[in-house]
Image (cartoon, rainbow, N blue to C red; front, side, top):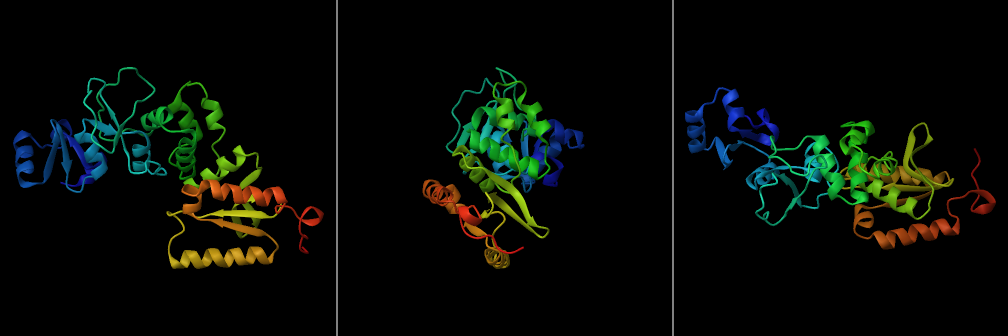
Length: 284
Protein backbone atom coordinates (compact mmCIF):
# COMPACT_ATOMS: atom_id res chain seq x y z
CA UNK A 1 0.00 0.00 0.00
CA UNK A 2 1.70 3.24 -1.15
CA UNK A 3 1.76 6.25 1.17
CA UNK A 4 1.24 8.71 -1.69
CA UNK A 5 -2.36 7.52 -2.12
CA UNK A 6 -3.38 9.71 0.79
CA UNK A 7 -2.38 13.14 2.15
CA UNK A 8 0.79 12.73 4.16
CA UNK A 9 0.37 8.97 3.93
CA UNK A 10 -2.66 9.05 6.26
CA UNK A 11 -5.89 7.23 5.47
CA UNK A 12 -9.27 7.23 7.17
CA UNK A 13 -11.36 4.10 7.33
CA UNK A 14 -13.72 5.43 4.67
CA UNK A 15 -10.77 6.31 2.40
CA UNK A 16 -9.55 2.74 2.63
CA UNK A 17 -13.00 1.35 1.94
CA UNK A 18 -13.26 3.55 -1.15
CA UNK A 19 -10.11 1.76 -2.31
CA UNK A 20 -11.88 -1.58 -1.86
CA UNK A 21 -10.23 -2.40 1.47
CA UNK A 22 -12.87 -3.70 3.89
CA UNK A 23 -12.69 -4.12 7.64
CA UNK A 24 -11.12 -7.57 7.48
CA UNK A 25 -8.38 -6.41 5.13
CA UNK A 26 -7.72 -3.38 7.33
CA UNK A 27 -7.32 -5.65 10.36
CA UNK A 28 -4.91 -7.89 8.46
CA UNK A 29 -2.91 -4.89 7.23
CA UNK A 30 -2.56 -3.60 10.80
CA UNK A 31 -1.49 -7.05 12.01
CA UNK A 32 1.12 -7.31 9.26
CA UNK A 33 2.43 -3.80 9.77
CA UNK A 34 1.28 -2.52 6.38
CA UNK A 35 -1.03 -0.10 8.20
CA UNK A 36 -0.48 1.62 11.54
CA UNK A 37 -3.54 2.57 13.59
CA UNK A 38 -3.07 6.12 14.87
CA UNK A 39 -6.46 6.65 16.48
CA UNK A 40 -9.96 5.30 15.85
CA UNK A 41 -10.74 5.60 12.16
CA UNK A 42 -7.29 6.87 11.15
CA UNK A 43 -4.37 4.87 9.79
CA UNK A 44 -0.85 5.55 8.56
CA UNK A 45 0.41 3.84 5.45
CA UNK A 46 3.98 2.72 4.94
CA UNK A 47 6.30 5.72 4.70
CA UNK A 48 3.76 8.20 6.07
CA UNK A 49 5.07 11.61 7.07
CA UNK A 50 6.07 11.54 10.76
CA UNK A 51 4.85 15.07 11.47
CA UNK A 52 1.44 14.30 10.03
CA UNK A 53 1.29 11.10 12.09
CA UNK A 54 1.99 13.07 15.28
CA UNK A 55 -0.75 15.55 14.45
CA UNK A 56 -3.31 12.82 13.81
CA UNK A 57 -2.33 10.90 16.95
CA UNK A 58 -3.02 14.07 18.94
CA UNK A 59 -6.59 14.06 17.63
CA UNK A 60 -6.16 16.74 15.00
CA UNK A 61 -4.64 17.73 11.69
CA UNK A 62 -1.47 19.49 10.62
CA UNK A 63 -2.23 23.20 10.20
CA UNK A 64 -0.84 26.74 10.26
CA UNK A 65 2.94 27.00 9.74
CA UNK A 66 3.38 23.21 9.77
CA UNK A 67 0.84 22.67 7.00
CA UNK A 68 2.26 25.59 5.01
CA UNK A 69 5.70 23.98 5.19
CA UNK A 70 4.15 20.64 4.17
CA UNK A 71 2.63 22.33 1.10
CA UNK A 72 6.03 23.77 0.14
CA UNK A 73 6.28 27.10 1.96
CA UNK A 74 9.20 28.34 4.07
CA UNK A 75 9.38 26.55 7.42
CA UNK A 76 9.06 28.94 10.38
CA UNK A 77 7.98 26.31 12.91
CA UNK A 78 11.35 26.05 14.71
CA UNK A 79 10.51 22.44 15.46
CA UNK A 80 7.05 23.12 16.91
CA UNK A 81 4.18 21.17 15.36
CA UNK A 82 1.05 23.24 14.70
CA UNK A 83 -2.19 21.27 15.07
CA UNK A 84 -5.89 22.08 14.63
CA UNK A 85 -8.43 19.99 16.53
CA UNK A 86 -12.16 19.72 17.05
CA UNK A 87 -13.33 22.27 19.64
CA UNK A 88 -14.58 19.44 21.87
CA UNK A 89 -11.07 18.03 22.28
CA UNK A 90 -9.86 19.78 25.42
CA UNK A 91 -7.04 17.48 26.56
CA UNK A 92 -3.61 19.19 26.52
CA UNK A 93 -1.37 18.50 23.55
CA UNK A 94 1.92 16.62 24.01
CA UNK A 95 5.13 18.63 24.33
CA UNK A 96 6.29 20.16 21.05
CA UNK A 97 2.76 20.57 19.66
CA UNK A 98 0.85 23.85 19.50
CA UNK A 99 -2.89 24.19 19.04
CA UNK A 100 -4.02 26.64 16.36
CA UNK A 101 -7.43 27.90 15.30
CA UNK A 102 -8.71 28.95 11.88
CA UNK A 103 -10.53 32.24 11.34
CA UNK A 104 -13.69 30.81 9.83
CA UNK A 105 -15.57 29.46 12.84
CA UNK A 106 -15.77 29.90 16.58
CA UNK A 107 -16.47 26.20 16.98
CA UNK A 108 -14.12 24.16 14.84
CA UNK A 109 -15.31 20.79 13.62
CA UNK A 110 -13.07 17.76 13.46
CA UNK A 111 -10.62 18.08 10.54
CA UNK A 112 -11.62 15.83 7.65
CA UNK A 113 -8.07 15.51 6.33
CA UNK A 114 -4.75 14.83 8.01
CA UNK A 115 -3.27 18.06 6.60
CA UNK A 116 -5.25 21.27 6.30
CA UNK A 117 -5.58 22.75 2.83
CA UNK A 118 -3.55 25.88 2.19
CA UNK A 119 -6.45 28.28 2.69
CA UNK A 120 -7.26 26.87 6.13
CA UNK A 121 -3.57 26.81 7.07
CA UNK A 122 -3.18 30.47 6.08
CA UNK A 123 -6.28 31.32 8.07
CA UNK A 124 -4.76 29.69 11.16
CA UNK A 125 -1.42 31.37 10.45
CA UNK A 126 -3.07 34.80 10.62
CA UNK A 127 -4.17 34.08 14.19
CA UNK A 128 -0.97 32.32 15.27
CA UNK A 129 2.15 33.78 13.66
CA UNK A 130 3.79 37.12 14.35
CA UNK A 131 3.89 39.62 11.48
CA UNK A 132 7.40 38.75 10.32
CA UNK A 133 6.84 34.99 10.17
CA UNK A 134 3.49 35.55 8.46
CA UNK A 135 5.08 37.58 5.67
CA UNK A 136 7.98 35.12 5.42
CA UNK A 137 5.63 32.25 4.61
CA UNK A 138 3.50 34.38 2.28
CA UNK A 139 6.55 35.59 0.33
CA UNK A 140 7.70 32.00 -0.10
CA UNK A 141 4.30 30.74 -1.26
CA UNK A 142 4.06 33.49 -3.88
CA UNK A 143 7.68 33.13 -5.02
CA UNK A 144 7.35 29.36 -5.40
CA UNK A 145 4.04 29.83 -7.28
CA UNK A 146 2.17 27.71 -4.74
CA UNK A 147 -0.48 30.40 -4.47
CA UNK A 148 -1.08 34.05 -5.38
CA UNK A 149 -1.56 37.17 -3.31
CA UNK A 150 -5.22 36.93 -4.31
CA UNK A 151 -5.42 33.45 -2.82
CA UNK A 152 -3.93 34.73 0.44
CA UNK A 153 -6.41 37.62 0.48
CA UNK A 154 -9.29 35.15 0.11
CA UNK A 155 -7.93 32.90 2.87
CA UNK A 156 -7.81 35.83 5.30
CA UNK A 157 -11.34 36.99 4.48
CA UNK A 158 -12.21 40.44 5.78
CA UNK A 159 -10.07 40.36 8.91
CA UNK A 160 -8.93 43.78 10.11
CA UNK A 161 -5.40 44.65 8.97
CA UNK A 162 -5.48 42.30 6.00
CA UNK A 163 -4.53 44.87 3.38
CA UNK A 164 -1.68 46.25 5.50
CA UNK A 165 -0.17 42.77 5.71
CA UNK A 166 -0.74 42.00 2.04
CA UNK A 167 1.10 45.21 1.15
CA UNK A 168 4.21 43.83 2.87
CA UNK A 169 4.45 40.83 0.53
CA UNK A 170 7.29 41.35 -1.94
CA UNK A 171 9.91 39.53 -3.99
CA UNK A 172 12.08 37.15 -1.97
CA UNK A 173 13.79 33.87 -2.76
CA UNK A 174 14.20 32.85 0.87
CA UNK A 175 12.78 33.50 4.30
CA UNK A 176 16.00 35.18 5.37
CA UNK A 177 15.64 37.70 2.53
CA UNK A 178 12.16 38.56 3.76
CA UNK A 179 13.48 39.05 7.29
CA UNK A 180 16.20 41.45 6.13
CA UNK A 181 13.78 43.42 3.96
CA UNK A 182 11.15 43.82 6.69
CA UNK A 183 13.64 44.74 9.40
CA UNK A 184 15.53 47.34 7.36
CA UNK A 185 12.37 48.93 5.97
CA UNK A 186 11.05 49.15 9.53
CA UNK A 187 14.17 51.22 10.28
CA UNK A 188 13.40 53.57 7.39
CA UNK A 189 15.92 52.10 4.96
CA UNK A 190 14.85 52.23 1.33
CA UNK A 191 16.07 49.08 -0.36
CA UNK A 192 15.06 47.39 -3.58
CA UNK A 193 14.75 43.58 -3.72
CA UNK A 194 15.84 41.38 -6.63
CA UNK A 195 17.64 44.07 -8.66
CA UNK A 196 19.34 43.40 -12.00
CA UNK A 197 22.63 45.34 -12.09
CA UNK A 198 23.22 44.05 -15.61
CA UNK A 199 21.58 41.45 -17.79
CA UNK A 200 23.40 38.51 -16.16
CA UNK A 201 23.72 39.76 -12.58
CA UNK A 202 20.84 39.98 -10.14
CA UNK A 203 21.36 40.82 -6.46
CA UNK A 204 19.13 40.23 -3.46
CA UNK A 205 19.03 43.88 -2.41
CA UNK A 206 20.36 47.22 -3.56
CA UNK A 207 20.47 50.11 -1.10
CA UNK A 208 20.93 53.49 -2.74
CA UNK A 209 23.25 53.27 -5.75
CA UNK A 210 26.00 50.85 -4.77
CA UNK A 211 25.42 48.96 -1.51
CA UNK A 212 24.59 45.35 -2.39
CA UNK A 213 23.24 43.03 0.30
CA UNK A 214 23.27 39.31 -0.45
CA UNK A 215 21.52 36.96 1.96
CA UNK A 216 22.56 33.33 2.32
CA UNK A 217 20.20 30.68 3.60
CA UNK A 218 20.58 27.07 4.63
CA UNK A 219 18.22 26.09 1.84
CA UNK A 220 19.94 27.68 -1.15
CA UNK A 221 23.53 28.43 -0.24
CA UNK A 222 25.07 25.11 0.67
CA UNK A 223 27.81 23.14 -1.02
CA UNK A 224 31.27 24.04 -2.22
CA UNK A 225 30.20 24.80 -5.81
CA UNK A 226 27.56 27.32 -4.69
CA UNK A 227 29.98 28.84 -2.19
CA UNK A 228 32.67 29.40 -4.85
CA UNK A 229 30.19 30.82 -7.37
CA UNK A 230 28.87 33.33 -4.84
CA UNK A 231 32.37 34.52 -3.97
CA UNK A 232 33.36 34.89 -7.62
CA UNK A 233 30.35 37.07 -8.21
CA UNK A 234 31.01 39.14 -5.08
CA UNK A 235 34.56 39.81 -6.28
CA UNK A 236 33.30 40.84 -9.72
CA UNK A 237 30.79 43.27 -8.19
CA UNK A 238 33.51 44.79 -6.01
CA UNK A 239 35.69 45.25 -9.09
CA UNK A 240 32.83 47.31 -10.55
CA UNK A 241 32.82 49.55 -7.47
CA UNK A 242 29.91 48.07 -5.59
CA UNK A 243 30.12 47.44 -1.86
CA UNK A 244 28.95 43.87 -1.25
CA UNK A 245 27.76 42.62 2.11
CA UNK A 246 26.94 38.92 2.34
CA UNK A 247 24.89 37.90 5.35
CA UNK A 248 24.83 34.34 6.67
CA UNK A 249 21.77 32.53 8.03
CA UNK A 250 23.30 32.83 11.49
CA UNK A 251 23.68 36.60 11.19
CA UNK A 252 20.08 37.09 10.05
CA UNK A 253 18.29 34.64 12.32
CA UNK A 254 20.39 34.48 15.48
CA UNK A 255 22.57 37.61 15.49
CA UNK A 256 19.97 40.09 14.28
CA UNK A 257 20.74 43.09 16.56
CA UNK A 258 24.47 43.14 15.80
CA UNK A 259 23.85 42.59 12.09
CA UNK A 260 21.29 45.37 11.94
CA UNK A 261 23.57 47.76 13.82
CA UNK A 262 26.46 47.15 11.40
CA UNK A 263 24.28 47.68 8.32
CA UNK A 264 22.74 50.86 9.69
CA UNK A 265 26.22 52.23 10.48
CA UNK A 266 27.23 51.72 6.84
CA UNK A 267 24.06 53.39 5.58
CA UNK A 268 24.34 56.37 7.95
CA UNK A 269 27.92 56.84 6.73
CA UNK A 270 26.66 57.02 3.17
CA UNK A 271 28.38 53.90 1.81
CA UNK A 272 25.42 53.38 -0.55
CA UNK A 273 26.17 56.44 -2.70
CA UNK A 274 28.53 57.17 -5.58
CA UNK A 275 30.38 60.40 -6.34
CA UNK A 276 30.61 63.37 -4.04
CA UNK A 277 28.29 61.82 -1.49
CA UNK A 278 30.52 58.75 -1.12
CA UNK A 279 33.17 57.13 -3.29
CA UNK A 280 33.67 57.64 -7.00
CA UNK A 281 31.46 56.08 -9.65
CA UNK A 282 33.51 53.90 -12.02
CA UNK A 283 33.66 54.67 -15.74
CA UNK A 284 30.83 53.17 -17.76
